Image (cartoon, rainbow, N blue to C red; front, side, top):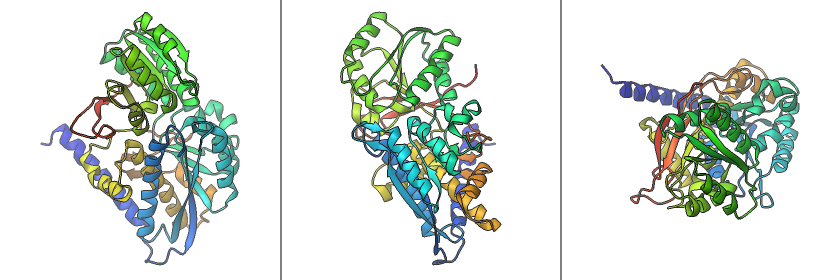
Length: 418
C-alpha cells in the first residue's frame, strides 16, 4: 500500500504527464502545416524593481509557446508572442498607465486572441475594462487582488459582462487570511503591526490579512502606508520597535519591500517579519540579500512545485533554454499559456473561427491537466484551487545567495478556514 506522500507524488506525476500530452496534441498537424498565425500577448513589468521576477514569468509563457510551435503549432496555427513592457523608469516598477497603453495596442491587433499577464494587480485594474470592451481574455500567473474578478465590481472591471480576467493563482481573499491563520497557529503570533505600499495589491492583501488577524484574536497595534519612492522608512520602523509587536506584516512588492527589509534588519533584526508573494521571489531576494532577508516569511498563491520530482524535467528544459532557474510563477505562466493554446485548439477543431471572442469562451470552459494540477475556472475567471504556500528565507551557504530555490525553505500550505 502506497504512503500518502507516494500517492501524492504518483498523482502529481500523472498530472504532469497529462500536461505533456496536452502540449503534444497542440502539434497534431504535419510539420510545415502551421502556416496560419495567431498572436498571444505577454504583458509584464520588465523594467523596474520587479523586472527579475517578471522575466522569469515571461520565460514560462515563452517556453510553452516555443515548445508548441516546435511540435508544429496549434491545430494548424503558428503562435506568435507579442511582448510589451508595463514597467517604466519613471514609476520604478509597474506602471498602470503603461499597462493600459499596452492593452490598447493588443486590442487593436485582430490577430491577438488572448494575453498572458499581468504580473501586478495595479496593472490588472487598469487593463481589465479595456480587455472587456475588446472581448479579449487575459490569464494572469501572479495577479491576486480579488476586486478584478469580484462580481460586485463587474461594472467597473468587466463592463461587457463576460469574464475576461482568468488566473492560474488564487486571490488575496485567501492569501492574506490564510497567512494570518499560519502566523497565529504555527508562529503563535499575538500582536502585529501592518504596513502596505499603497498599491492595489499591497493595500488589498494587507487589508485581508489584517481583517482575518483581528477576527482570530491577533491584536493589530497599528497600520501605516509606505511611499515606494521614499528612501527612508526608519521613522516608521522606530515607532514599530517601540510598540514591540510579535510580527511585522508587509503588504506590497519589491520597490518598497527591498528598502523596508534592509532597514528593518538594522532597527528590528529579531522581530518576526512576513509578507505576501510580493516579497516571495528573485526580485526581493536579490535586492535585499543576506543577512537582511534571513528569517522573512512569504506566501505564494499557488502550489509549490519547484521541489516536486514530477517537474524536474520541465525545470531542466527551462534552465537549458533561459540559463536561469525558474520560480513557481514561471510554472503558473507556462500553465497559463497552455490554457490559451488549449482554448485555441478546441475552437479550431470545432470549426469555429479562431478569434478572441471564441477563445475567451473556450478559456471559460477549460478543464486542463497542467504542471500545477487540473485547472478549471469559476464563472468570474477565478481558479477553483485555493492553495497558498508558505516559505521562509533561510541562508544556505552551499548555494549562491540569489538562488531562489535553495535560499527559501518551503514551510507547507497555509491553513484555510475562518
